[in-house]
Length: 509
Image (tube, rainbow, N blue to C red; front, side, top):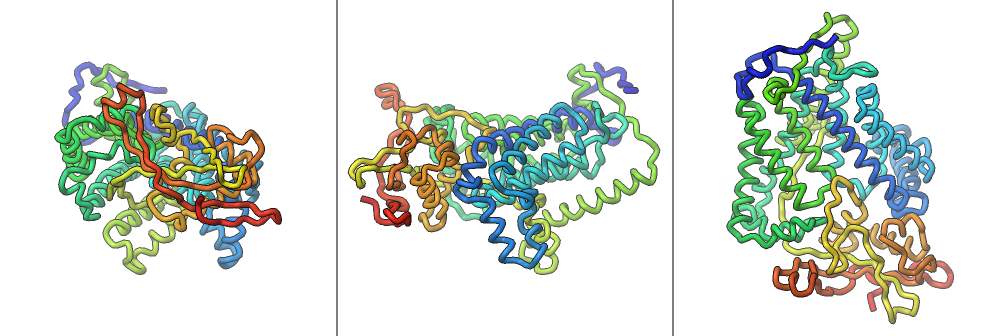
């Protein structure tokens, strides 16, 4: 039976909360939103995973797992790559894992057996992350893994728990989710100053930010043209929020609610102006854990009164296990930040590394000063004519408006942005993608908008580099172009398939 507090209309939003604060509504909302974020992660993989790590993908998971098994002692391979794909890593297995992840995500949203479904979704996502190799080197993946692991302990027990009135969230699990939220902000702020990047110190970090990020949006195009004083102000606000305001999470509830409002507005602004997959959605959602039930009552929403059952031996053992494991994660996150190379002291943190549930964070420590784009082109006439493979999400056609895709994460397009910032030798998967295009791999071709060769793959594929800028307002009005670009030359060069089936990488022509 659920009982509700009376006198909700008279509850002050900023009443001092010394004890008795509950977070049933916040937990209910955060877990439903977490299910949607898991859904977005698995949904995006459904259209990409075969092209990324499938049997005919760029970096096949089977070959990767075999390489690990042959390089490490027996049984330790499961620690280096914790994944259910050890049971099978072909296309069918990948489909099953992703489909199961989608089902579990929807069950989380529906509040069906939340502890079980959160655990399964986290394990299935870890299975993908552990085998995606170059396509999972993102901080957002670690954020979701960490949130999923802690949310398992945060969630109410039972098959249909509703608000979980009889099983309110433990203080430790609530603290750990807030701790993750705090670290994402604070460690990013520290990284910005510690990096020595002059753009953060002279308040120019945002002047070119909107056009140089991985996947800009059309809103960002307009914001890019705001005056310098606006961009300098956003630098100051970002540093103020990340280094100072987020500390209010540990302050009394009036300050916490102010912190919630400020950080929520910041995240909404980021979501509108850049496509960072589910990263900002997750940070936004975790911020709702600063809002307790009394703040909800101020909105004239009935507030349930938590009721706890007498602690039995089973509950006590559960809390002991929770305390031990979350304490381990807490220690690891602290030591990673203050002394990452502290020898034996850092051993507990290193033990958790493959599971990505205790991560260091440091978003945009240094700013990119230019936008480069890698383009794949094929030729069927010996290099006289080159035809570009059209991307689904990356800037390419100068007349195409930048879209808003997040929380969907196009990992292939995203990774090409990182690859463009360094020599091709640091991203040799780009050449492997060229190989798959020459082979006509359907799963890799599906990563592009369409096949310009209509099922007849060219014998030569090259990668070239362009530099892109947003157009100015006058050019946009006159031509309709969102971008201007300049050809810079070859990236990895021309890959040719010889008559005997070998691949030869040569200079671009």
